[in-house]
Image: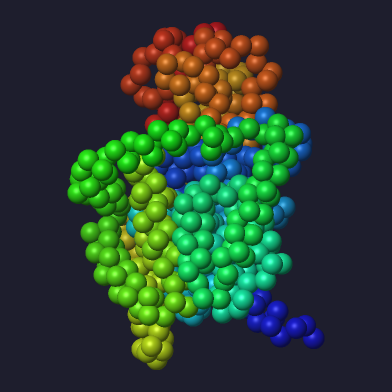
Length: 486
């Protein structure tokens, strides 16, 4: 007989997996938007990185990774899934389930019940299904969704109800380092609010959290050192003009504070559901602040809202284009703070959570079939199939050789074509652009100038590609395969 607690954990995971599989149409709406309606190559980076690693460990040393390279947990999860299947859809479905589970794990770490965690996870799946271009990004690799797991692990180490020992401080420092190293947004969303709450907590002494921060900084630089030894490159924080951005923000705040804060809260205006979420967030946030000041052991419930507010500030200071993938803490904060207000009435909280659970399942695309969502799923699936099959057929006639394209088709064609079709990325001006790209893919080419390639991918309606006119053009859905010379 196995350990009862382990068996119960496995049964719960099995239930969640079956539930997520049951709600597969909701995932399809997200998957076939990003890999059908559009060619979201950025989300394919972890899959292609792991594919290269499985072919040869040395092949990955040419990768230029994004600022958040997501070694842990995204790449590790994709690697584990790749050992069970090579099907790209199933790998991304498995990863989406991991993100689904991360929501529940984080809310459980905050002290919420399992039913509240499941409400939040189902809410993310529902809004992702409705708005795949924005909230749906949560379920994609390298789009910051697994940060919830990293924060949940940190909270489980802290255990606010217990005194933090030096041993756990060092472990927390290691988790901080691994989290920031893998996911730079952890620094903004999670590390800063978590540290702030710890410093004012009754049970966590400042010297213990400072030990965690100091050891975390040491571990972080150790990780960077070993990364440099592998040859894998990435856009490092020191390349970001932080001083200049902070100076500009300070000048704006001091000269016109009202305008500064007006711009700050307008950053999320284009998010679907913002007209409802932001007022709800504001009401719940202020109610929770007053309660947390009275009961300091409840301060941990402010970590999520502080994370959202800090993300607004950072996006404004850094002048990054506002995007839902930076604001996942907004809907999660609304769920967490709403149920926090009901903690004094456990029976009512349980009843309301069950009502939400039933409602979210029955309004999903599995039951409440939306013709518009289904049409988009079918359209995305057809676009994906047509692009790839048309490209393979055309290039088999022309003779398969490396081609040239702008950024988005490059990794997309490599991931979805079994024929190993290869594109070299360029800017629209014809400059070699290996952003989130493996330089080893292009080593065999004698020249990395766009005029060295005999074919490329353009947009239908274009007469030229990188200043060269095609002698034969084939339309493949929203791609134009252009043969430039014989």
